[in-house]
Image (cartoon, rainbow, N blue to C red):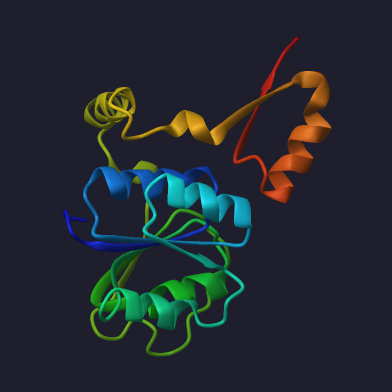
Length: 179
């Protein structure tokens, strides 16, 4: 994606929020985060999303198309849910690109990829680690990629709490620390 591009991210877990931060750091013009949990939508807005939507809203694609003046340039799905991928593709402009990081059974209605839209699976962000990791560290040091805001530590004995909080959406990335 280029500076000024419009991006919609489906799923605001660790990977989706990292995509929001990366889009903001790259200078995206419009960044929409679609998420079920209100707390994660709020965090997405704090981390760079210009708009957030509840994933249960039946008009997600139409709203993204309206907000971006014809559809997003790029969609990114972290859910792996077939219906969400279809919505992501519907939210794209002609020749828009959709990247998937989660693999589930994918069923696409006919004509979903019309107008030159493309769909691809993304592996490790498509990055070259020896260039990408130092860049992310520099962005983090500059306060432009605050990935540490996604992490919450739990003592190993609180593993049930970590699992509960992750399922509830109140913790994005639980990390267990041995006592």
